[in-house]
Amino acid sequence: MKSSFKKNTSTKKVKLKKGDLVQVIAGSDKKKTGEIIAIIHKTSKVIVQGINFKVKHKRPQQEGETGEITKFEAPIHSSNVMLFSEQNNIASRFSVVINDKGQKIRQLKKTGEFIK
Image 1: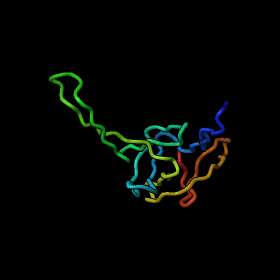
Image 2 (image 1 turned 90 degrees about the vertical axis):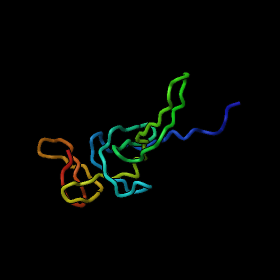
Image 3 (image 1 turned 180 degrees about the horizontal axis):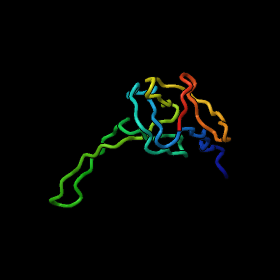
Image 4 (image 1 turned 120 degrees about the vertical axis):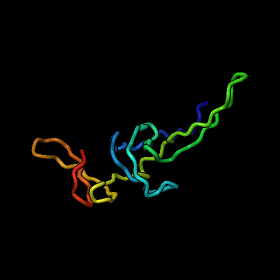
């Protein structure tokens, strides 16, 4: 007999790109800014440089070896970050505009600034 429960696999498309400057808008790192290092499309999460640090303790495996404490950036959901304008020092939503050459360019809604 098959199970009637479905695993939640629905994900929204992450519209941010690697290298974007973003500001965290929710959570313990609220108002901090950083650059996107990686995007995990399956879970709609992003890894931002210098944001959401976690600590992992590693036990020594062999005799004479010492344990380690490593810090790393954990993923944060893409809905908790927003594109950031360094010139105007403001976070904003964005729209996609088509330029003269027919290329799609992202434009910040609050400032009108174009993002590469």
